[in-house]
Image (tube, rainbow, N blue to C red; front, top):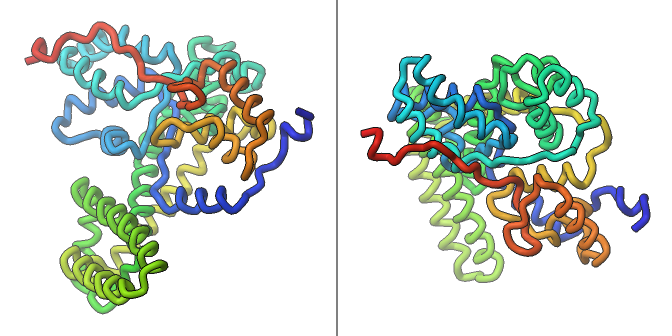
Length: 365
């Protein structure tokens, strides 16, 4: 494999273009590195405001935000949880239970020697070697870490005190994308009923239950739309029925959900503001994106393991994957501890942490 072939630019083919189009129609999974203190703060907030979920809980539970942590972070949470909770005046046993639940939604990624020569990672390592893996993870994923650590913030690799804004921004983006799905599926928004319903729509969009309703509406309409388009294209007698069903569905959504043009505009503004905040949290690469970083970011936002073949298609845009390129990427992924081969030739980024020192649930009752 030549050097020029290795850095071959992405080329979209018919099948990759279709896959990208379908992927972009769904609310995107956001991801970010996270450090020890943010995890501990979230656990404490979870216990204090239970049963109301935290912002992180709201997005990680349905898998719309995925958190990645360096190996030492998971160990530090285990080691510091009891002392932190006692200092906050909270029951450590409840914190342990909350940590066990959250740990299932966090992936531990060992960056190994990746980006150890990056000037930002090196600067962090000089100040605190324990933060170097989180710094490397931020560069690998291209996203600032959810952290207030001074070394990471000064290097531009952490969000600082505004880390919670990133979480809210991800929520606004997801909600807006879900609503866009519903509108794209054929739901027309009436401007005739704007007066008197704008506040109701705004309230619906701002409450957790309302967010779940709106997200559910969008996803449901997307699935119906995909199936409907297929039937519409191949079965002519079904076309009129589909038109009538779409009209009835739009009417039910507008009258039952009190959805208006004003409410849609409000959610869209929130979504665009969310995009702005998420872009501000992007971490630039010191060099051009390489195949390892691209593979990591594809896997970071995936809902399930991805095969080497599909990764090659996504990274380089092949329609027919050359065997040498497949073997090359397979070898590269096997060399990096960040990538976990779940089954032969099928990959995910990181693994679930091993939570230690967690007492049985009955011990907290």
